[in-house]
Image (cartoon, rainbow, N blue to C red; front, side):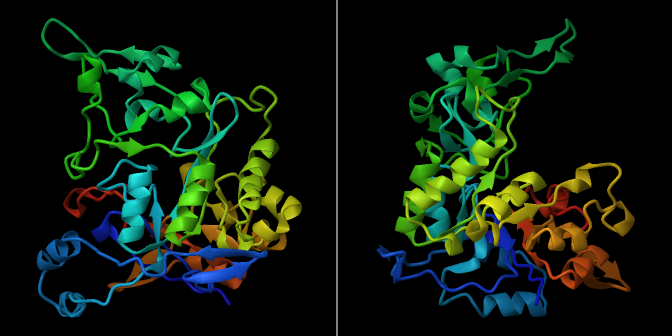
Length: 385
């Protein structure tokens, strides 16, 4: 039976993605595949001051009173909170420090967004070509290796912007060893910058650089080892390549297989891994070639970016929910706003959500991440919610 559960944890700064899955706990010491793992059972959960600040700022009402009653806890780790990018509201994303902070704040599942380097090694980055906004690459000698070197903003004689500052630096521009020499920073840039240092000072005002001094970048393998040490489950996303595939003989199937191989080599049970992709062909490949991992592979539904797709009109859904299920897909993951509608003042499941449930699909919703203030719309993940 499929259920839809929507839970958010913007209060702690790690992404919250709601599971509708029934999964066994992975805390404490367990024995699987002949190996023992100590899973950080005694890690204390500390939410920090942000939840209390947000609750105090709420209008009086039943929800505020209910949340206030939880002020003293007890707090515990939960699979309903997924650290996407780690705790990226406050820490440099996809760094060791960000993941550790998310685990400390109660995230029970961590996401390494997976891409690859020039020498075809897997690393954790939200995009293959985001190093210029998420690391210090532009202030190192590796800047000359970037696909698009830094170009300052240009203004006319009246001070009007003619062209914004740009750069593009990809993991595929550099080797693994070179990648590991970089430091993570808060994601952002200043499009009006005329110098590299100014370009790198673009952290949005609702985030912070307080913890941005030493972001440790991780390989995919290192993330697996860290997550096992922290006692959390894992949901890697195979990011769409920004370079033509195959890349120097490295095919899309090679890429998808390599990600799974690194879990197998580390002895991580498939039941603790939810592999994700926006590319349905990756999902089908895992279902066919790695069925133990494929059975809980997550199809990230980004079709809303297609002008021909209307989440309120099943005739535009290709593949349909029924086709996905018949192909072996068991979990679909859309943004939260595709799952909800407002009817007569009440929030109700959308047609999309009901059709997914009817087809037997489980749902994981993208809820909150490092979004901006609700007063200004909150960002794309909050859209109509």
